[in-house]
Amino acid sequence: MKFVLVILVVLAGVWLWRRNRAEDARDEAEAAARAQKPKPPPAVQAPAEMVSCRHCGLHLPAADAVAGAQGPYCSQDHRRRHEA
Image: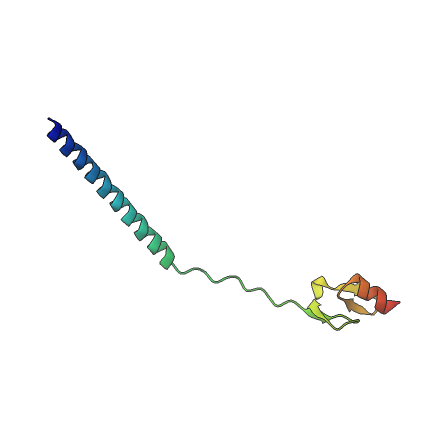
């Protein structure tokens, strides 16, 4: 009787092991298929307009520049120094 019980436990273990291997193989195949799909290229933005600081000559995007009476500056300090 013990022999039959041991065989049943071993067969159940083998069945569970093979089922897990089949699921793992299926998951790996799905992951590989997803990895092979071409990704769309990132959206290209238009280049930002660049300006140079009137005090030090540093080039920076116009959106980041500080506007002054005599032109763009890289910081409030440079605007104050140059316009004083």
